[in-house]
Image (cartoon, rainbow, N blue to C red):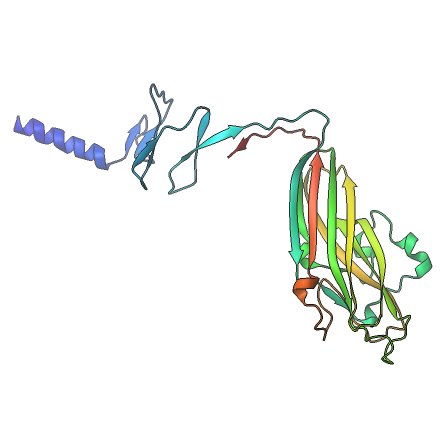
Length: 278
């Protein structure tokens, strides 16, 4: 009897400490089942933080959190969409405090009368001379449907190192033309031209805002970027132009005040109804 009990206790100890395999001679976990599993009663998750056991709620799923972490119960939701209606599927916003600056020598020299022919929809970024990208606004967005509308809201501050008019440095008509464009996959989808002028205060600045839209992008990831250029200068030699940052030597604004932002909203007619687990 003692021998039988010793053998039984030894076998029990091995089962408690070793990996057990069913229909496998090389188990990869404490219990490795090579085949179907049928649970007749319940599945529960032990929480070591408070020694509680959770069986989850009705319609919840058991979701892995990765190696070394216990699984958790999650609810499964299927979004309800109406056919042929647009829904906000993707939205995000980005900011940049570095910006870009232009010296007088950075004028792109696109003649005033030819700008309409130069800046056309779909123009490739590489063909536009002396445009500079605002690096922090170069991002990737995702589109999941062939029927979509993507909206872009770009805002920044344009700052120039003009001295005050009347100081003998800048005449009344001193000004700089500039333009900013929104690009998708390096193709121009929106552009705005403006002019900043010298006035009675040193280092004048203006807020620049533009909204762009592009329809029916192909499904998948797309690059979005914003780039600006200095178009032309009028009695503004040796004047620096700063976009999304403060002009050199200026103390009336800083790069926090001048920072750029880009908001992206993509509305789609859903074609893929992906379940959402939360």
